[in-house]
Image 1 (cartoon, rainbow, N blue to C red):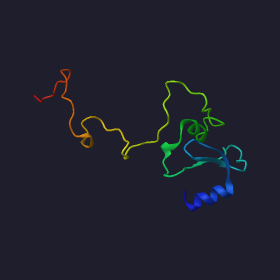
Image 2: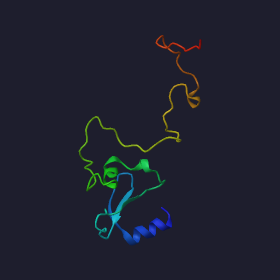
Image 3: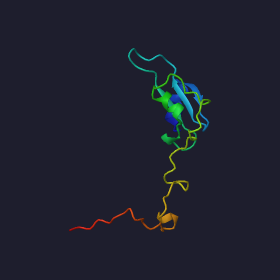
Image 4: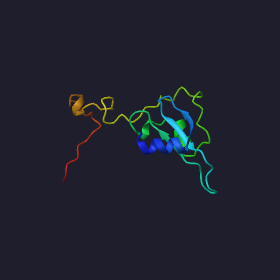
Length: 117
């Protein structure tokens, strides 16, 4: 967090909550002007990366929900939230990627190479 955000948050922010990653969520203390919505923002823990915001807080930040969604209710098909891992050592690399050895399986019989006439 830079000094400007810290001062703005200290003067104008009311903390609403914190997610399991340590990100803190705020909304403006004062009532908005008629026809406007109360400003909401997040102060990230660590690196500022928008993909670190889990779905339940994303809905609140974008005024889809009045309160953060219930994290207790989950389904067996749901996966744990992960931030964008592109550019890290945990990023997905398909078979044949240079950093995965550069070798891939041969194409099967369902592939027909295109040749110009």
